[in-house]
Length: 144
Image 1 (tube, one colour):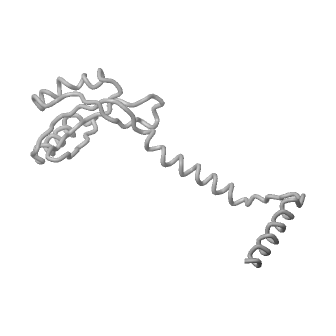
Image 2 (spheres, rainbow, N blue to C red; image 1 turned 60 degrees about the horizontal axis):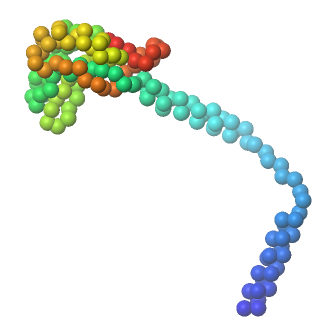
Image 3 (cartoon, rainbow, N blue to C red; image 1 turned 90 degrees about the vertical axis):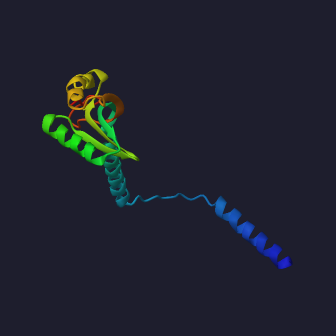
């Protein structure tokens, strides 16, 4: 027990001496740290770029069915009749849904409602969705 106390006192006195030493500290920065910082900034830019390419907007839901072949036929028809509208084929059990377009406003989407209703009677309506933005366009979204 005495030995433990003596060792503890010796360590405490050494620690006190080390703290009272008035010296200066020189920090040398490794130049590779700058490279790592630039690389991380580049990675951050690339990973957030995709999130900036999407935003709130509207799409037109063309069909919602449990029959996969009907949904695929509708997608084919969209490609033929409306090549300017990008189709989005979704499966949410048990439904296959086909949505088209990337519209910034509800009014832009409404322009396509009448013609699409003639092609797909009774199943066409505008829905809020996350749309793809035009990376070259500085505005909030794009319409197709």
